[in-house]
Length: 65
Image 1 (cartoon, rainbow, N blue to C red):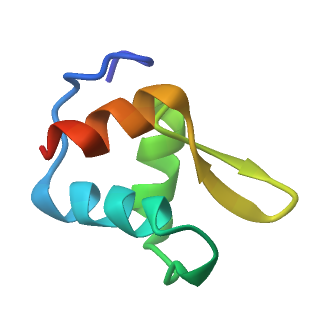
Image 2 (cartoon, rainbow, N blue to C red):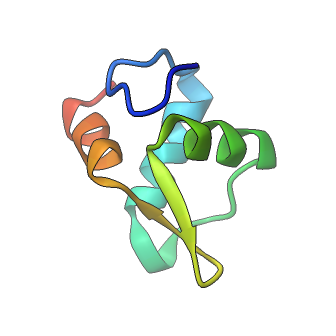
């Protein structure tokens, strides 16, 4: 999985987890495997115990896939 590639392949459930992170404070917990993959790809980051979208993550969510 190449990092920081907005077109990196995501499983449908991984994309659903990315959308959960996009919701912000009201986000649900996402599976640990999804979290690890999304961090590795550069779509999310963990800051002060919170998951946040990166700029590339925002692009991916906006693209809807």
